[in-house]
Image (cartoon, rainbow, N blue to C red):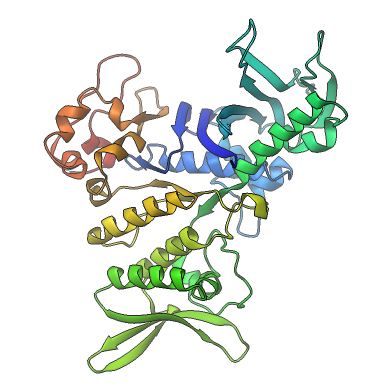
Length: 436
């Protein structure tokens, strides 16, 4: 069984505090603008990038397209704070392993604490934390940080020095010795956690960058999907994938689509095209003439279908399990196509591609079945200014509201009334979704 990322934890990240995001087959984040939805995606992108092994500054601030997350490394810290904290849980053959890390952004960008741990499964300390790797307090004037790894012996655990400029878990393979079973165990757990994080694929398609010819061999889908045509050209060689793409494209548009194909330039580059029947003639609609919504939809379809895709730095051994992350998944999509998209997302989960997405669309919510509601998280700002993520099914009047009709209709016409208390939840889905 492959390692599976099952939870994202955000003790302090941007506007979020003490947030837990369970990652299911399909996880949807809903909420008003500024409620913290995008910050959840940024946190997952940041943690996944750090797992790649590069320096924290390069991972968050570098890249040819600018910072990985809005505001770069310093923007990850809550306003007025000098550090941020993120964590995750990974399921490996039924056992959960946890990674928690705190990163300073001022005066230096570096790890100031990190912990790789699990719950004990036996013995007198059953259920207590077992620290596989844990940092000592950092030295403010050093670019290194000391951590101790679990050698399963009595007495203090052995000390290892790590670079504070990188995620420690990504350095375990070169720092923790493999000369004992305990050392090999720590290395294996670190490898599994990194593998799970490497399966995260952030998709942020930019339609105007998808309208040019691209080299046919450029088949590893990028975050902005500017090489979409090459990826689709590769997928179209598989009859099953071709059939799914054609069915989805036909359902997307009112045009009479007869085929989806690619055309080649004189230099051998490719561009995706759709064959449309107009009257008795068949016309070619190349990517440069397609609508933004069509191109975004095709990018999502490509990410779901391409078995070779995974997060940056992933290898083929983990390519079969992915977590696709998309912001405003309904962007450019007519409400009538919500069912088509959701069904595709659910079918993809059966073949190893789960999805985390944000949405403002009542049509998307309308198409959810009751069993899907536990995977909907409502993001909102409390009176203290911090963002929180509340499971939809945790609202006290959840059953009362959804019993009156579909969830999308409830969001527009009804109010979910939270219980009183310091941990106030969103006043209503009308407020959270920004609907009138």
